[in-house]
Length: 134
Image (tube, rainbow, N blue to C red):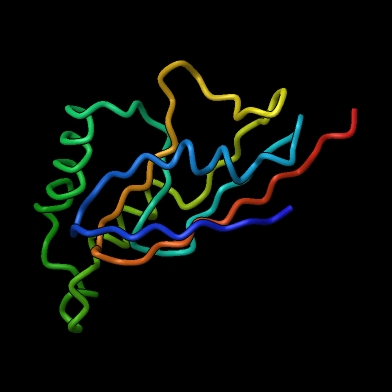
């Protein structure tokens, strides 16, 4: 089963909790695995606690981590989003999460977060959920 959600971001850098939306994408699977993939190169999917202070910390890292490495070649060619591409490459575009008894098997503090690094944009997250044959 393959499904998609579209998420509208409204800031250049932003963290959005997609856990509930991702859970709804796996509703037809009782036990198996769900693979979530963001179809963009300047955003990422991460597993992290969803806490307001931690969101600010994630944004701080996204905005400043590569500051000392500027300027980037990509930016010199009128592409100002080199840092977003690099950050998304490190953070990752895909997550594989087990589905047990119809629910995503997430740890107590794990949430599926979209990390926007080149917004505002429309982002598409694809989910392929596969039922395990036991």
